[in-house]
Length: 280
Image 1 (cartoon, rainbow, N blue to C red):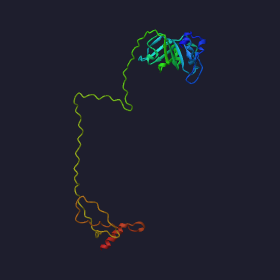
Image 2 (cartoon, rainbow, N blue to C red; image 1 turned 120 degrees about the vertical axis):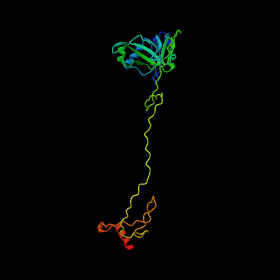
Image 3 (cartoon, rainbow, N blue to C red; image 1 turned 30 degrees about the vertical axis):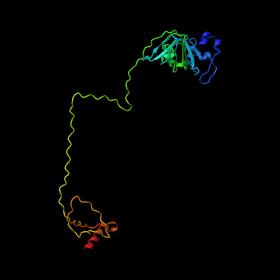
Image 4 (cartoon, rainbow, N blue to C red; image 1 turned 90 degrees about the vertical axis):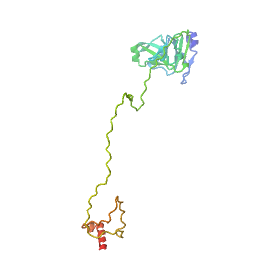
């Protein structure tokens, strides 16, 4: 670039240079790859019209603005105004060429003198053309991600004192899924806590009063104490909670047998009849 500047951007000298794009495109004419203040509007106009090739380009020009910008003054810009405007719907709009970065030393943001050349994928800001048309200006902008993308020359040594970035306190974010709770107030005095209702003592587990035992009316001899061939072994009686009575109560009165299936008596009735026959 400095060689071309030494030859006053002579077109015949520029034809001796060509560029290669990262996608492999070769022999890109220098006049399409590198733009200056006099023809930066051609790149911006191609971006407005949507006809620009998606290749990185170099744009250079004289620095007129270098400063810290942004709401918190934590980003930096080196900028100049292009010689020619761009046209949005046949209306001329002023064009600014801006190199932006969050590192002031990468773009030489401490001096407004000399030249700047930046290389990369340039964009328009704002990308809303109606907004750009209403505000009367649009910016051909490049955000620098690496220091090798920018070079400065012909600076005179003057510097600009950049303001310190504004550090704003960050509010802690509540943990996801947990509701924000306010801290519990510290007690200033002893507040009596209500006593829980008294639980009544459990009732004494006293045995129920003995009920008067009614002796059944005997109607026949008692069943045999041991097993018989017809009856089989008797089931084991439950364990009594108090001493057993001295004698086994007699059998209850034998009810009159009811007819069962096919007019026969039930098995229990037949068993009782057989027992009584043996005892008689």
